[in-house]
Amino acid sequence: MSERYLFILFDDEASWVDASPEEWDRLMAAHDRFSKAIEAAGAIDHGGEALQPTSTATTVRPGPDPVVTDGPFVESKEAFGGYYVIECDGLDAALALAKQAPSQVVEVRPILAV
Image (cartoon, rainbow, N blue to C red; front, side):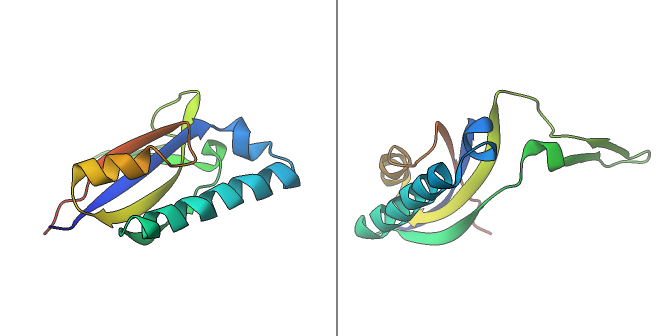
């Protein structure tokens, strides 16, 4: 049975923010190869996006007295830099694909079917 997973990509933010045009091209080529590997494995790549640097983030804590602060929810060396939504045949298949992702850390989260 096919399931959907969110691959959350974490990397040292400098690896993409400070990338030269040549380094950026290599990074994008690695993501293109990863998308092809997803398809070659018989999985479906529902897309994904790269995110702007954490310096552009704004965090909102809703409630009776909402709090809005500049910056990401969590400060860390590895930043949430992008994501993929993948459909494949279970967690083992998702983990096998995540091991090929062009990222320093990949958090794999099942997507709740509603």
